[in-house]
Image (cartoon, rainbow, N blue to C red):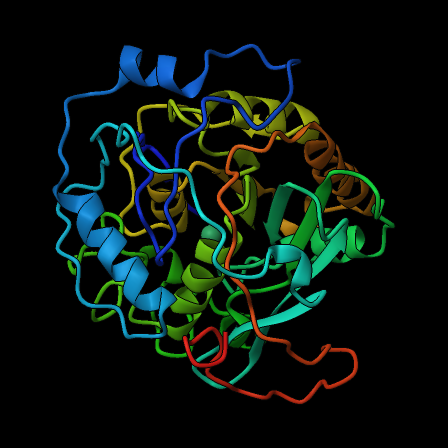
Length: 347
Ligand SMILES: [Zn+2]
């Protein structure tokens, strides 16, 4: 379980060699009443503090190019600097996401277990949703949502593509432990706000292969919305964060989960802080209830929530994505095949 995403965010920088830009649209459609991003930023954002996001961007870029992340000093998780003005439009320099295979090996765990992402829907769609079933290995219920989504046909002619990852912590899931095989809490290992004082944070920001894999993948896919499932608080987090608030409220209504009660301390090095701080897209940490309350009926509702969210999605990040190399379909080649994916040589 996690409380996180209390991080105010406004800056979208050059990451992984592509120029990013902010778009003032909320990812959900007009049924959600909320001022555009630029308005919310000017109304609510605290003063600028540009030191951290630059470091994070450098670390992210290094990871994006297959390098080991350099340590990022980050006592302050808040990215508060204004978006760059007059940024050039992104220039496609590589094949679009539509050329990616429908099943992508995004990385491997400490023990060499593969982490696959699977696409449904229209590969040419501009709107991209990502759902990650498991990050803490003893919080497995989200995998059932992913499986249910994968079992449901998604239109190949609509304007949405749904990507799903069953678990980004396959070692922890196999052992039914929260952390990964090196006893690192992956949701404390991301570089934004990382603190070595936090138990399980790892030896350095993004020190773990699972963290690096998701950072590479998400930096290239750049989903407009991401859901990552936890247990067992029975609430949608991010509803206290100015950036994700309305999105979180809508998702809470769709899922029947409670909204986060505001005022708790934020955690360090979380995936949501990293993504929401560095990309236009929205990431929500979704705390499902305890496993005994994860009924088939609720799994169906939560699956439908993902599908509804995908239909309501707006394209908040038009930045061209960078290519991924072809990888074997997990159904065809189930054996782990650790390979250094996403390096400049093979992308
Ligand atoms: Zn958790």
